[in-house]
Length: 355
Image 1 (cartoon, rainbow, N blue to C red):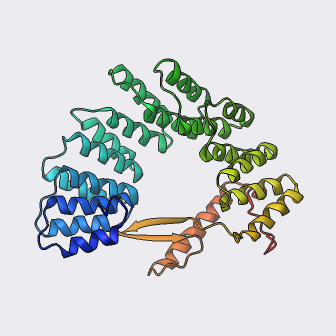
Image 2 (spheres, helix red, strand yellow):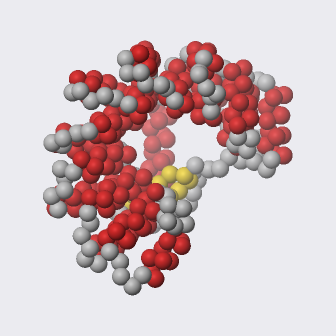
Image 3 (cartoon, rainbow, N blue to C red):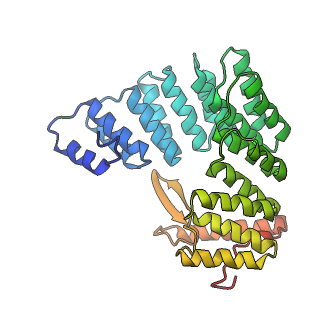
């Protein structure tokens, strides 16, 4: 109950107070931490095994999902090894979790190997592999796998089509993406939801067809949500369409007035277009709401089974930090020698420091 209510500290307190714990007890707590994206789920898994309990399929599925959430490839390999040692590799749910885990850790080759070796596959298997291909830019492979799935008699659902549309979007295959969008409705009678429409808007927007994306939003059978307008706003920023960008930004602010990233994007669109009056209004609103800066995005990296979290300019407490910055300088120099990129349209304008 506490895990499902995301009250993990209370759940963990009761867990510690128990005189005896069985596999269900451990699985429940491990799954609770996994759903919240906490590294403690893997620590608990390791602790459980060290105490002599034998993990079952549910335990391994949860542990693989935790590795996927944390993009922890080394831990994922160890989980996979434990599955093989116990002869559980033919379990469909486990194999599906491994496909997703390897893909989210950036290893599509191993995802494909697990998929190929499966004696039986269900819709989730095909979906996981399709999404794995699509998320890494292998659009042709994703399309080929989709066609193979249909020929095998498996009926696609919204999630599969979302993966195909995302793959086409990231690879610039606009016509192919629109073909599958139309096929989804006409051939399979699947109604597009907000997420599907947002993906098609992104598909058109990335290709510079911003007006078409806006017309699609206007024809939607329901009121567009923040993700749909956000896809249009991002496209307007990339292609310098200030009018539609302003409209999309204001729609988002109507839905979520305190979104700092929307104010930043809008102010940058106005600045790139030379509309300094609107730019000044946006910055004034940001200051008035106490959001001069957007929250810094964090990244993480796994080194020797330890996960390090950091953000740009962060001076990590790491023995090899000087080597990290030396490598970054080398990469920056290589980029400068390889190509010349104008950064004028990508500057983050800041009135306070004048940059």
